[in-house]
Image 1 (spheres, one colour):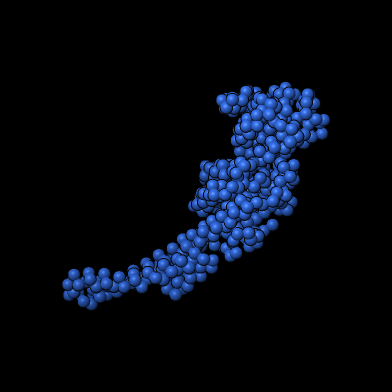
Image 2: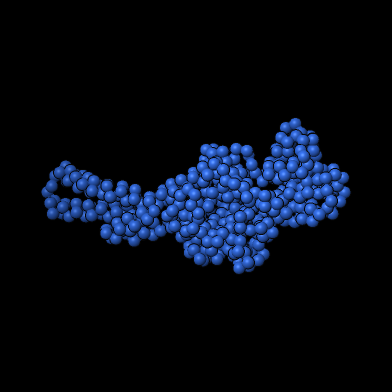
Length: 450
């Protein structure tokens, strides 16, 4: 088996391509089911955010698995694999582990260090678990990735400013308007992003927040939460958008809808300059809105262009080192665990030899007193245990290093161990390839295809 990560993100694809591959909440279960029905896929987790769509899968064969997963992503994007492949990245085995740990830590985000990805990864795992596409390998891997992400955020200052796409978008809006204080804000969509936007708008001192949402109950709930924090707020339906846009200063939209929610035509009645922040994927706001006089659009495309040149600071470098350390520790633990079936088989073989010889002794010397027989049995078993102790402990230690599986191979060959032992070791194969050279600051090579 091979661990495979295949996807596209803001680093490899323009927003227009990400839009086509975007996965709504309703589609996630369908795609997971489609992935699991692929001939080479045995486990799958789908991570879909506003700037990435990627699949982590355990596959029986690398090339077959890559074809299966790429095919599913291409069908989702409404294109063929040949066209989509120009924007896909592929990580396998140890490099897939490293990539997931970087994603969970916020190091691969458009806004480096943003913490929202941890919640998004938990959601992705929950959806896969509900769909029945998570097995032992991905369960352990994702849980460890979440722990690594928490450690990076707690031990570094990578997210000290609470930066996220929401804060960056609203910072751009504030730069255009001069300030958000005293402004009237409209939030379209009451999901996690909408709630985060509300918190930042409240702290920025806006005078009023209106929440427009397709489901009235959800919009009303967010509006009540905002009002409870001391900012006047009310909820409305999407049918009232034209009315609300006419007096809004700043609009934040992130609905998860598959079609445009705010058409350029409804902005003609805006009575003042207005900034539209669109973090929806696909877009919630008609791109033509940017051509309406007095309208400024801040979207994923403009944020991508602005943030792509951001320099890595000391906290980012420290986070990168922590991730590299966690990757090495995780792979070492996996390699050490993989040798356990061989050690078990060796001890089983020794026990079988001891039992056979004691039986032979009992047959040849039936007159032995029971207490003597017991003492002989214990003595022989102690001798065997002592002889096996050092090599079995040592082989586990050696197995934790890259290439350590060779020692387990040698044991199986020298002692003609049960052929089931190699098969059991092979079950850990997703993590045991391309593990050399994973250290802080190294560029990804082995285990990567772009």
